[in-house]
Length: 237
Ligand code: MN
Image (cartoon, rainbow, N blue to C red; front, side, top):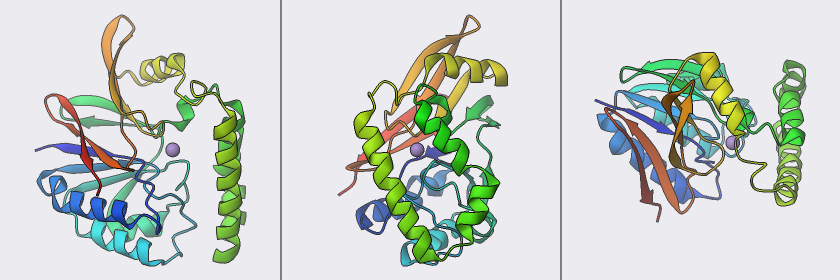
């Protein structure tokens, strides 16, 4: 019995190999799992639950067949995944952050972008994108308009990443400790930074762990949380 965690698959029509790897993952490790957590940026972009593209249908149908309990958190790319998506896949949407009791531990789950507080420009954009007014306005546009806006936002984001120092786009260590203190946990799991690792740290003088999930590109990554956390990777070919 185990709980599996993934994030940052960035599913997109241009990468059928990643979609294939995800479907194989569902038919493999997930078959044995009790719980599947998807911690954001599952899709490269989500224009709204009314976007019935081939990719979206394929993924929804595959997730719906998974018998494990399914939990989904928004990332910065797919923050518009909504109630219809949740209902049609049987997944429960989690707010960011959420604390769950998993494998006998209190675990703090986050996407991870909110931990990158040194990237002030990004944090401002994040606040705007998460506002109900912005989301309502965006969803009232046609799918074509939404796709065009998403493309231009993506280009701006790529330019921002090129111009921003790598350490600024990583988590702020003090912010990690603050969140773990606030939620009284000794284990945090997040994605977003694409720097998979199991970090040891101290919170209030006690040993703690921060586990970073990996993005799916040439390799796929998942975390299995049993007695001991195991971060696994496999080739996507
Ligand atoms: Mn992200």
